[in-house]
Amino acid sequence: MCLSLSLILSFSLSFVVSIDPNLRRGCLHV
Image 1: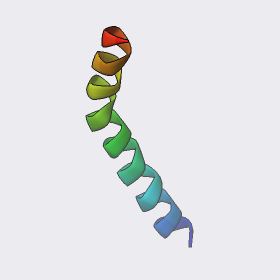
Image 2: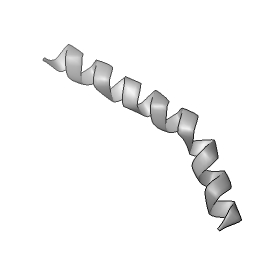
Image 3: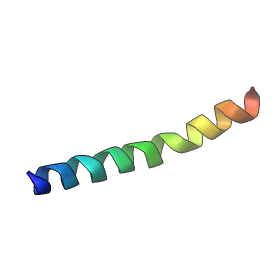
Image 4: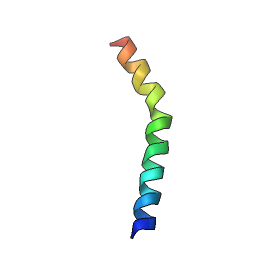
């Protein structure tokens, strides 16, 4: 259970990190 939760957390974190530059670019345009 804990291992699965940790895996999901690290996966979502890497996803957020990869999409973050796009979000910042969007905020800059707006």
